Image (cartoon, rainbow, N blue to C red; front, side):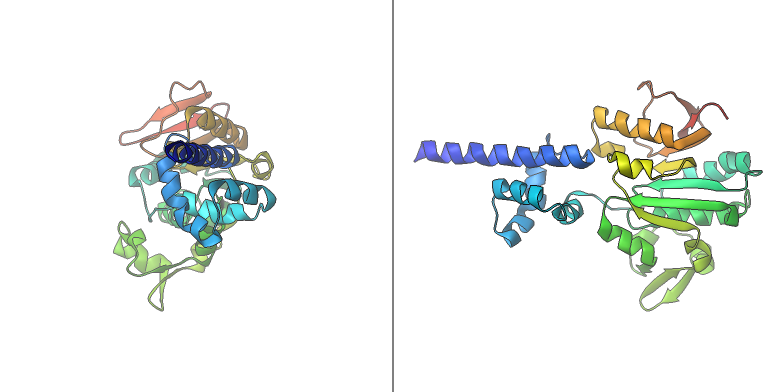
Length: 276
């Protein structure tokens, strides 16, 4: 009886690790070092499907659409408007003026979640006056279909924590009160194109046209060094010469030999691709 219990536990661990490996290969999220967290996130879904981990991994192979459900369970989508304000100030102060003579400025918000980041970028650009907002095209992507639906709608409940750093004047200027929340104005909404995209999928990345600025914040913290290098290489290839990359304040690629130049501003840092 004791031996049977040990064997069942070992099989459980192996099948859970197999699922962790599948997730890592698919989207780069590394649960292999924290399988207990993955188990907690998967518990309800396995209960609904009445499956073991072994059965679920086979089900996932036969039914690729199940990845949509799985991604909803394993991704972290916490965000808010005007996050990391120092970077937004630097965008207005130092980066945008370098594109003032450019007819079209393309910005990519990678892993945009429920849309607060790309909308914040558009509002920041509108406020800055450094370039006309009509010359800016923002591509916002995420791997999670559910959060993209929220982002495309552009409506947020008035009690949502996403407004915790939103100045009242910005709320009055760029949002329309609607029902129990606020709808982003069409003036801002029309500058953004939302797309589904997996940062590790070569076809998805090839579909992203070259851009001038990339924001990918608080995403690399969920990747290991090898995956980070892969993603950063993709960003480098998608950036035009002289383009800029903004990462989260807790993320750094310095010392990774990525060919990016680190720019240290007074209250933040970011990266530049040479050649402009």
